[in-house]
Length: 250
Image (tube, rainbow, N blue to C red; front, side, top):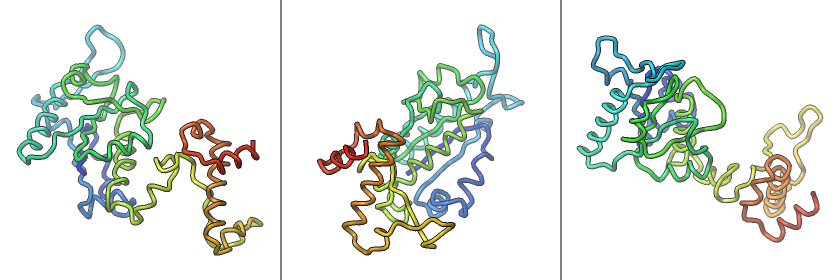
């Protein structure tokens, strides 16, 4: 998978994407499983000051990102894809106006070969960029960030880790919270030592009885979901046994 990121702060991504000690995504990039190109929008300007923003027409506070640098960059990205006989990129604008990002959407985006992420700044981007290039807008939550760079990292991490070969254990992504496999929160996890500050690992996990362990994990996942995110149960695929267990704890 290939990600293009359009930003005016390219250094923002250095530690997360270029340092192999920062986790599976940076390792996947270094090994070539994932490709990420961070493009500085100032490289697509044509004035002496490399201007990427200007005052809004009609007045008001703040600045607006100019259309020329963004459109110039997107033209180049699309042309490169054409020359390489590659699929045209999906252009995503990171914006509070967008669809709220979740695991289901991450799985859908993982099916694309090339995604271009536009990092907004200031009051936003010129509306004509949306009209001419943007396929859809994406928000990572109902709060305000200084810019789209942090959101872009969230998307690259959540989508990139779903690509084949990125995770050491391919089943990991299927068993996580919010996965399409069960739509439940994950069960609790334990490791050594068995006894820690008066708290012990549940005996069932030490039994070696895999059927009992699976049953315990399922019930704990159901319990946690019912307590912390009950709305998820409406979408989850529940068995009669699941329903009976939920009936006991409610």
